[in-house]
Length: 227
Image: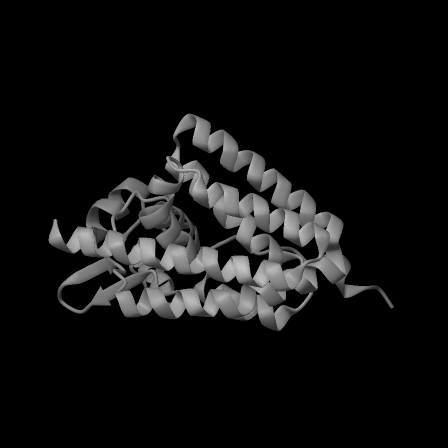
């Protein structure tokens, strides 16, 4: 009997999925501000498609929490509250240390390679004063623990918030992190603790790091509201 997988092909992505991928990238990279309206008609013209796949894409991104669709008013990039930020950061404090410990058990060498590449990229981004590049590398570093943890349930749990986390990082912390050394130094320390397998210290530093991120986010949000 022939193996049916020999004849399996990957279906091309729908127009809506292609639009969603590009919009997700644009939101994460800061091409749209938090809370900004997303113009369906001009986007459709830029993509060279009808408004239908744009609307479908926006609905997909709404399911991921990146977009808020308001009937009769339009679609907007999400804008988190201080409570949302606190909840996301507490979630990170709970799951990231465990994912790191599992990654150390299952794929230490591969995880270390990803972490070191991310650190190198963050250093280059700091030199170039490129906040978007820094934010992308920062995201790759934190996601490495889940990528290599070997637990699909933990990966799925993190995926529910991953795009929001990446977006908040680029919009609210990377512009400051690219100018100041503290966050970069903490990432380097996390790498060293992971390499040594010192996970009590790793968890304590991760909580300190994420709590500092939370406070930075809240300050940025308050400044935006006052401005």
